[in-house]
Image (cartoon, rainbow, N blue to C red; front, side, top):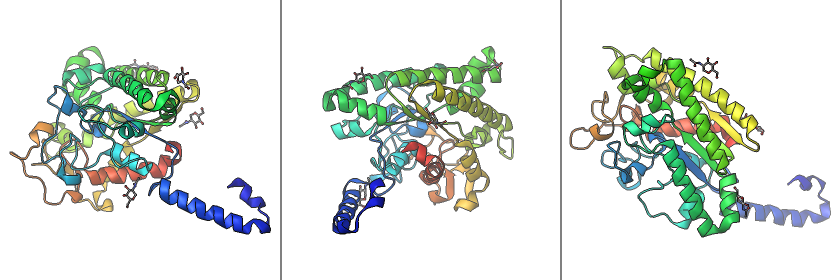
Length: 362
Ligand SMILES: *[C@@H]1O[C@H](CO)[C@@H](O)[C@H](O)[C@H]1NC(C)=O
Ligand SMILES: *[C@@H]1O[C@H](CO)[C@@H](O)[C@H](O)[C@H]1NC(C)=O
Ligand SMILES: *[C@@H]1O[C@H](CO)[C@@H](O)[C@H](O)[C@H]1NC(C)=O
Ligand SMILES: *[C@@H]1O[C@H](CO)[C@@H](O)[C@H](O)[C@H]1NC(C)=O
């Protein structure tokens, strides 16, 4: 493209031909959305980006039954903690890679599935290994071990050069940390006996830093790290700690802000010290809080209750088709169950993420 400024008039025809070829190339190869050089999206984290890994492990944190998946293709309950698609799906789609990022565990994956990326995420996981252990989810180390296994598979199917390329050019998406605060620290007594909140945040962010160092050593370069949401405003926390009027819980939101601040500082440091790394911290706190505080501005009508059941407490096993009907119009709800956003809320959030960080992700 750069040399086209110096085109002679005699090469107009050639130029036209080039343009037509370019249009053809764009139509054939490139996807309907952002064009990107990113060959794969590889995902780690918790229920926000678990497409069904928990189906394949012994844990109670599962949702591979209706009404989960109600708005997924074929209304299939895949194990995604949502009525439809989840953030990893929207990101892969925005990058023009594929429409769905599959779970690494529990399903037959084709060579093409592997080459374009998979998810190792596990509902209930956290940077703090205890967070995963408390609910028998995969720890972040377990997820890294699965990633090592995945790398070997890539080498077998595509050869070492292409496998290396997939890893070094791929986008590593990591979404976790919420369950460390909401479940482990504020709900169970174990860590509070050892740590006050600032030292627990230091501890958890130290775990996060070790994870990113290890991921880098395993070949990852481009990493997108999503911070924690305003966890004090998710429906279940309003019900448990928000008083009779179910307000947002200020302490939980403050904890999220402190955690994000520490995490983003450490990631900036890592981005400088790890040679060739491109680590982006993605703020999800601000945009999700805006959806919750100004739902009408986005065409939502309810942001304090989930769509499943009463919306006050139902999540995973408690949100099932035997005991709980769902709301009439899920598109009016920010939250699907008492903890996880709806597909529509995710779609809006990821569109905003691409507006703000898109150039860093492609
Ligand atoms: C592009 O759109 C076509 C038809 O609308 C669809 O079949 C295809 O899956 C889409 N590709 C991507 C990468 O979104
Ligand atoms: C692939 O990457 C590994 C380290 O990440 C390196 O040791 C190896 O030489 C690379 N292989 C090729 C073929 O580039
Ligand atoms: C947390 O870590 C920072 C340095 O990263 C330190 O200044 C601070 O004292 C630590 N806080 C606690 C409570 O350990
Ligand atoms: C990360 O570091 C690279 C240089 O290695 C720089 O180009 C990039 O802007 C940094 N990214 C962020 C988000 O700070």
